[in-house]
Amino acid sequence: QVHLEESGGGVVQAGDSLRLSCTVAGRTASRYHLGWFRQTPGKEREFVSAIRWRGGHTFYADSVKGRFTISFDNAKSTLYLQMNSLKDEDTAVYFCAADPGGILSTIGTPDSYDYWGQGTQVTVSS
Image (cartoon, rainbow, N blue to C red; front, side, top):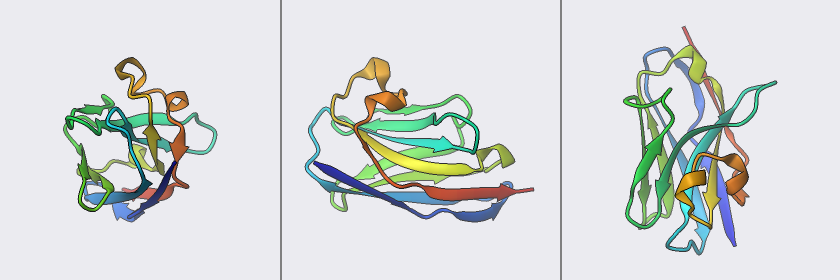
């Protein structure tokens, strides 16, 4: 059983930086993937980034490569998403999620994740 809760969202100007946090409560298996997804009204939830719990391998959507960095602090059981050079199109509700299966081929697929946080709003204005 895993409980996730996001925080750190807010309103920022284009070009600014923001760091999201996601506390992970409960046991996580070695093959777990921890990921970030985002969603805007009228659009489907889309993949942003993910990290493999064991090994620390990271994955990013093309739209955020070079700007966002995902990390996980084992001591604090906290997932982070450092977002730099934010753009208007980054505006969305951001969700963290956990996939106990840890299948690489589906790491960017929302349906592969069994546990979800409630989301935190990120608004970027120009």
